[in-house]
Image 1 (tube, rainbow, N blue to C red):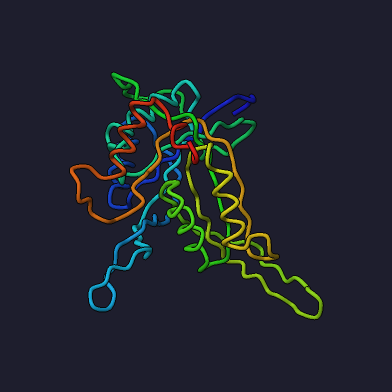
Image 2: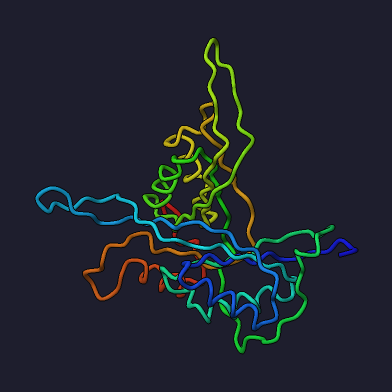
Amino acid sequence: MKSIREISKITIIINKAYSGKLIDFLHELGIERILVESGRSSILGQGRGIFGITQAGKLVYDPAEIISVLVIQDLESALMSLVAKEFELSTPGRGAIFSTPLIAVKAHEDYMVYEKLKEMPDKAQHFFDELVGLDCIVQRGEGDTAARIALNAGASVPYTNYGTGTGVRDKLGLLRITIPAEKEIISLIMSKYDVDQVLEMYISEAKLDEPGRGIAYIYPLGKGLMNTRISSSKASQAASMEQIISAIDSIKGGIEWRKAGM
């Protein structure tokens, strides 16, 4: 890559059971070099406590993989449409897909930017362009707090993967507090209209304003589809709440109507 240009990073988050099929599908399109990260998704479960009393708020985990590729901007919609249609990502619970606008200055050859596909979609998929990303980085073992905040707020399904920081020892008076290097990264793809509210909840409930507890930040996205199946409870009606929300999204042509307080 010799010149500066605008490109797109396409990220697909999918259950690990389907990741092999997704990788094969990308290979068939001519995309050979793919970044794969392992993680998990979290949703609210319905458990049974003593005497069969229902307990709400328990988290249910599913292994997930985060798959990323780089393409020129002209191929962004085409690739996203092909993947979304093949894996039914517009259906709540199937996963998420989104694009991130990037400026390519220089890259290693392993991070190849693809300029053509072996197949093009017959019809472009509708994607939402009112999305942002919200990441929260906390110490290992504390990620469930942030995940539960996102789910209780009805934002979307959070995805967790792992990383290693430098580890810090800070001095507060006469106390020495060691901050472990192992981290959990909780990623959330959500409506830009409610992100400030969720960020404030992260800060207050996860105590991110205290030294060493973690950080949270917002970053721009291009467009995409988010996973809105936040609960494992079975619907007692003909359609689940997630399906109703998805239908209203289609009717409204966007997600602005979801804004809290409207």
